[in-house]
Image 1 (cartoon, rainbow, N blue to C red):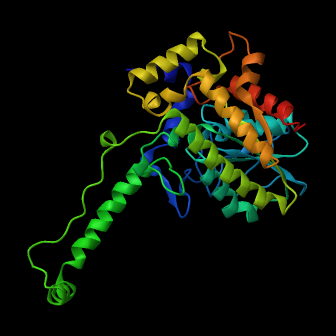
Image 2 (tube, one colour):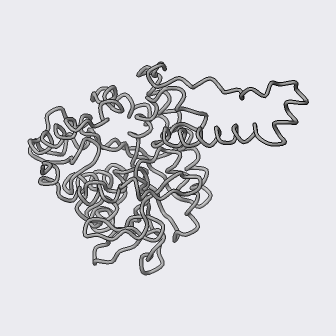
Image 3 (cartoon, rainbow, N blue to C red):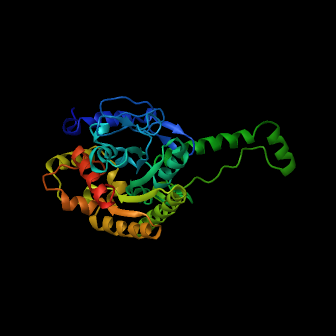
Length: 358
């Protein structure tokens, strides 16, 4: 059966192949990053997994590949999958390329987006790679949605360091490893010494009580969810500023566009794509259903704006800006979180004007 999204948005075949979980690139500290040296007509990455961006004369550059000619300063678009450009038909139509080519060409723009990243992974990505970069003039962080989604997970998935996507897979694998170590402790000399010294029976080993399942846990309220997402974003913006101020880098934050925060009525193409994804059993409503109303998006953006003001970080919210600028016929989204080429070009234009990047 041919999927409607593969007819309406054929580039998504390549984006889905790129995201093949069997090809996940596991790396220290960040957990995961993009496939390296990926080549296609739709998207390409360098030897470390950063997506290429294109300039006005056809030149291209990336963090760990070719740097822009001339040796001048560059700007970075950081953030998650919208910054990376999921849904774009080519590297040249993602936001960093549109900024470099047309809307904010004063400096070349490098793609620093990480698919599926929370705000802590976004800043860690910079910490681990800043030494590879030319002089950076500004960093724009296009993000916000993933922190809000992750803040809705039950308490056992949270920690002092927040939550991250694939966290359940990580925890399950680590639990299996812990169990193997516990089994190893009960064999050989170690077991004999323990039994002798503690007077323990040789009949079996102690097992920890099983952790509660998702169904057993209380999920956070909406107020708690927003508060957690704002707090974690605040911590990471403070970290961005600590890293950036020492080098005189200007940091800005943009609330990423989300279909239900931009408008209530969608184009026929968007409606067809959203309906198909819902029918396939998408986990969208599990992760985002509670935060999908536009009023939640406005409240969340207002609280993030206050955090940005406190930390002297420039701020813009692309959702009301897109709502004011786009027409009812403008097809902006390939799914509720990612954009079409038209959507990405509009987002780049609004970033440039809203953050005075030109």
